[in-house]
Image (cartoon, rainbow, N blue to C red; front, side, top):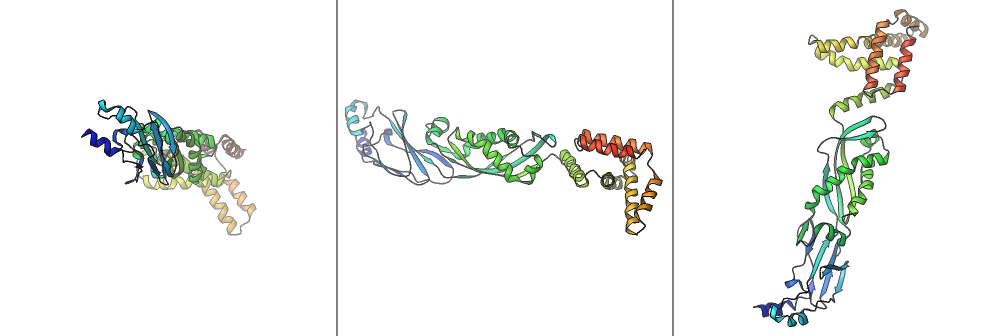
Length: 346
């Protein structure tokens, strides 16, 4: 039986791989006793590479094409010299095939919010997810670092490692890009480009090439999203204190309506907004007077006659101080609004 096996394996002279199914990155050609016949033909197709490992060391890497193999391992001569060992040659040669086509739609995401430093908001916690495409670019490095001597290595076995690399480099990518969070959220392609730049070197260390990445969503925790909404609203009104009062009043009206007749917490919020509502009414009266042609001078006189109580001003200063502490107002914005309020006491 051993003699027949020995004779049969001498006629194996075509070595090739046709992939079956998706996701196979590395595959070892199943040769009898791991021996290659001298002069055997190796067929490597497009989207593949092959590697010969002779006597435990990588001998050569082959790209697409037809290759004639000549090795130190000559089966006929070697086996005849080792007849007492049942024709088992001590010189072993492996042939590995690698798929170099793109591996598509690999997923990544943040299971928990991650903290990044932003030049506009300071520390920000965000969530993000998307997908990426990669391919095997360096068979020798991938073989020595990842797949080793296994018969088959699948792309899905890399999922956890690659997702970890993405998460590890998100903060570095954003910090290195210098892109503010608001721009990242509005232009997700900029975020993806920053991630690719940060990850290319990490993928190359294990023989992979990152071909592309998409960011499908960037979001903040709910409590930070509310603060961001307020910041956006403040950006729309600028340094106009009248518009700021109207904005604050508009924000408070729905809460007051929901809590009318309810607990003291809502009532306290409504009282805290009293000064803002008063200022909003003054601005509304001025606007109505202007539309009716009453004249700018008479409208200003009416507003001055109403006056602003010191307690109202102090309440508004406290409220502005809270907004600054939460990061909604910058120091410059707070100082400008503080000066404008203090002028009303003169």
